[in-house]
Every structure is written in C-alpha cells, then in structure tokens.
Image (cartoon, rainbow, N blue to C red; front, side, top):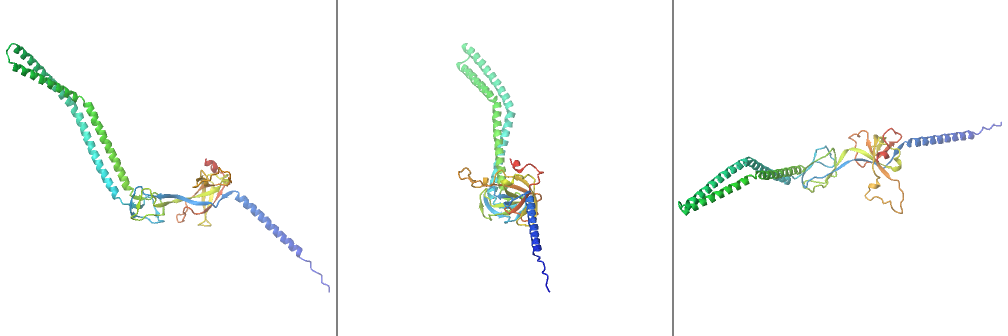
Length: 369
C-alpha cells in the first residue's frame, strides 16, 4: 500500500519567523523613535553635585581656647556657642577703658564749670573794673590839684619844699594807680576771648570723652568676641581646635555647613539654548536611587567652569583646539528635602530639565546677561 507523503511545513514556519522578526524590528524602531522624541524634550547631565553654604568659622580676636562646646558633624542652631577664648586680657582692657572714660568725663565737667564761671563773672568784673578806673582817676585828679596848690603856696614861701615834694609824689602814685585800673579794665574787656578759649577747652574735653567712649565700646566688643557662636543653623565639620590651643584672629578653626542645599549642574554650552528660568527639573540623587526630587532652574553662572579655574586656559595660542565648555547652572529644590536625608555638598546627582516647558521666564542665556 502506497503512503501519500505529508507536505513539509517549512515554508509556513519560515514565514512566521520572518513576521516575528519584522514585528520586533518595527517595535524597536518605534521604541527608538519614541525615546528620541521624548528625550529631545529634556536636557540632562552626570556632571552635577549638591551645594550648600559653607562658612569658615574663625575668631575675630586672638587668644587661648578655654572651652569647646561642639564636636565634628554636630548639628547646631543659630546663636549656639561654639567655643570660648580666655577673656582675662580683654576684661583688663575693658576696665582700663572704663577708667579712661571716667577721667575724661571729669575733665569735661571741670571745663564746663570754668566756662559757666567765666560767663557769670565776666559782666561783674567789667563793672567792677570800670568803677575802679573812675575812682582811681578821681583820686589822681585830686592829687594833681593838691600838687598845684602846694606849688602856689611854695612860691609864696608858705610851705616847705618837703611838703611840695610829698604832694607831687602822691599825685604821681595816684596817677599810676589810675593807669593800672585802666589796664585792668582792658583785661576784663577780653571776656569774649576768654569765653571762646573756655568753650574750646570744653569742646576738647567733650571730644576726649567721645574718644574714651569709643575705646570703651571697642573693648566691650573685643570682650564679646571671646565667645564665638554659630551664625546660622547647620552642621559643624573640620573642627581643628582643643582647649589650650593658641589661635590668631581670622584663623579658620572649623566649618559650618548650612542646612539648605541646591544643585549645581555643569551643562554643556550646547545644552543651554532652550533652557529658561523656572523650568521644572527632576533631580535623582545617587545616594537615594529611585527617588526624584522636584526642582526648577534658578540661574546661570556668569562664566564657564574653566574660566574660574586656578589656572585658566590660555586660548590665544597657535595650537588651539576647540573644546565644548560647561557652564554651571543653579537648580533649586521646589520644597526642601526631608531633614532626615543626609544631603551634603559634593554628593552626585543627575538632573533632568524639561526644556519643552517654555511658559516661564526668558531664556537662561538672556537672563544671565
């Protein structure tokens, strides 16, 4: 009995494989096209880091450390004591400044009293001197008259020569007294000049008081500088002092890292064309994978990163090679991340800027001008 051979299924299976391959190819092309279309609406970079305000803490006066109130990585509040210097020298200067101020104030009171006395006694002294001049002149005139009468009597041999000489001497003495009284009157009439001199002395004394008061205020300030407090909320790091340390004014001894963080993303200059201030940003922090932190574009640095390097490039050379530069862009979180998260300067992040959102401010490049 002859068996009829079964047709081979190879052609159908081959066609099926080609269909699957074609479907996969079409799906891949569509997927790549969709990814390209979607990615063209975003700008991203791996060259981005967290930043925060870092304040180097340094004393404003020199001294010996007597107490340290914080440890490395400790969280502090604004106004919280950090460390203290020995205040003995500054307390001595403060007491000296207080004594100098008291002496200057006493001098000022004395000058004020002299001025008041001068202003009060000047009119009376003038009147007294005028009266003395009138009395002295009257006596001198009477003595001259007596001397003339004695001369007439002596010519008649009615008195002796001794009596005449005595009368003349009396007249000359009283004339001298009259001249002395006139000079005294002229002296008392310099009261305005004396008043001006006393006023100048008072002004000098008051200036000395102001100078002493300024020295006292400075001494109080320097005394207060021996107690160093935190200028803002933050965390202490890089502490480099212990009780007994001798530190100079202005020498940093620790750093205070602020609690508010932001992102500095170094985008290529070719990525800035469509960026605008306020555009939404999705930030992924490497330390917390899978979480996106909403942020927005804040501003553009006025210069590339290389322009502020320790050794800026010298492009005016014959072997110049053009390199695409990176420009730092500041990104600010919409809401501050939870305080429990350990977000510190230098941590790596990956921002993604939605450049399709053009409903915000001017282009970032224009806003930086």
